[in-house]
Length: 144
Image: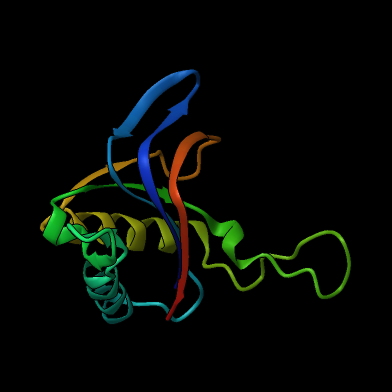
């Protein structure tokens, strides 16, 4: 499982020119799955995300988590996180999990995460326009 987290001031996702998910401050999380990812991997990743201290405290130090600040998440499915360009300029996605299984894990990820913070999403498998105002900028890559 790979996630790319961007601390955001304001973000939204459009599908077919319609905004379907929107947050003010929080995280935009791009999520990708590979073969052998499972519920245990997702639960560990969620714990890491929730406890990641990259929001400023009163002293302007990155010392607070998304839970501490009660921020939101915009979650976007992103199989291209598993792009492999070792054999040329056309990426291979052979490590990415198949569509059906990835969709199940993505839905579980969002349902579980939404027990702790507000979660907005894109639409799995659709072409999306993601608009992000990256705060900082702060971008963190996590892999399990």
